[in-house]
Amino acid sequence: MKAYSEACRADDGIGVFSLDAVRNAAVGALIVWVMFASNYPVPVHIHSAHMRRYIMQATVVNPIDIVFVVLAVVAVPLILRRATYDGWPAGLIGVLSITVITMVFVISGPTPEGLMRAVRFAGITGLVATIRWMSPQTLRMVVVWPLTLAVLIQASIGLSQTFILHNGAATTITVRWEHAWTQAYGTMDSPYSYAAFVAVGIAVILSSASFARLHPAMWIAVILGSGSVSAVFGRIAALSLLMVGGVFGIGWLLTRKRRYFASAVAAVLPMSIGVAVGWSGWQVRAAETGAGNLSGREALFRRAFTIIGDNPIFGVGPGEFGPTLARIGLTDVDWTIVHNVPVLVAAEYGVPLGVMFTVWLGLLGVLALFTSIRAFAVFVVMVPLFTFAYSPVVYVAGVAGFGLWLAFLDYHRRYETERTAQARASAESTVLVPAA
Image (tube, rainbow, N blue to C red; front, side, top):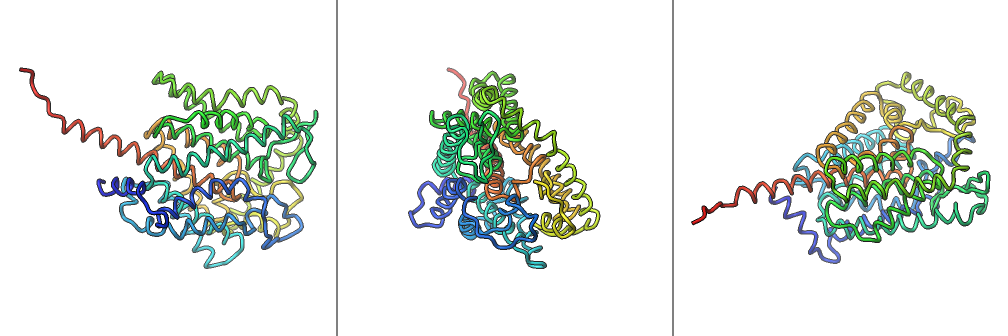
């Protein structure tokens, strides 16, 4: 453990052109670039006329994939280092296993979707391994500050799109609401990818207060980000922030620490105010859901279990859920991927791996619960996304958020383990001298 701690601190004195510097630069680039990544698609393969842009990000080569490749390559020495696995980092071990399994699928039956999945999973494996070795100081500079900047930019643009510009240009990336409401989408091509990215960013920023006091700019990013989530008129990201605020609220009730109360308020109150201001947009969204969106999701669940029943052991292959539906006669609905990550994994990788994936997520939750309140707040932000969406394993922004989520769960566990060990060592080394 001593060698591991020294290695974690060693990155504070790295050279400009060292491998550690390249890894850190790649992490920062991924966080900033993900805001713009989905607007640069180069089509590789489309299976039928029914395949809409909802599946495009799984089947295109993106400039940000260069960053994923760099992270995967430069992190190999860390992944092969025995000390990396001290304390059993469940996040890293799990995503590394998924990446290897995905590569086996791609080798046995190459598809563009599978290749993109393998590249991006390899990239976030490198991301998790790199962040795990950072010191708190480096983490703050390389991860937290770039993420703060990204959330500030996205929230500022998103709020202006909804509450200032209102009926902005009607393009494929805007949705017109009654009373001229426009969904916030920031620089991304999907408002829901935008909301998920901001929600994960808020949880990560607030949880980083375990390592150093939050800067006022970070609080501003959280407040603006929370408000901007209400401008998406989507319930998944809103539920994520409510769960984050709930965990911090429970933490405040248990400990009476003001920083937990402040975190809960910053995560939930701005979003609640935004929902009240834009309530008409939320009503329209709810009416649309009741009119047909829910039935579309139910149909995809039924199709998912049909696919699982036909391919129970090995599935249809990573990234092949949508193409398989197209081949068997996909109806013209807005959703081409089942909105539940464990079910999607079971359909694409097989039931055994789907069960293992679900157990792994549960293990991450248990470990986070016994690590700290902030670690558990990071865990819960992804629960609605895994349960009611698919972006964490399909879209560029979702995969990047998945990687950051895993990295911070592992980092919190390592940090708390080391701090506890240091406190124990300090107590054992104290010699009590009787008073004269």
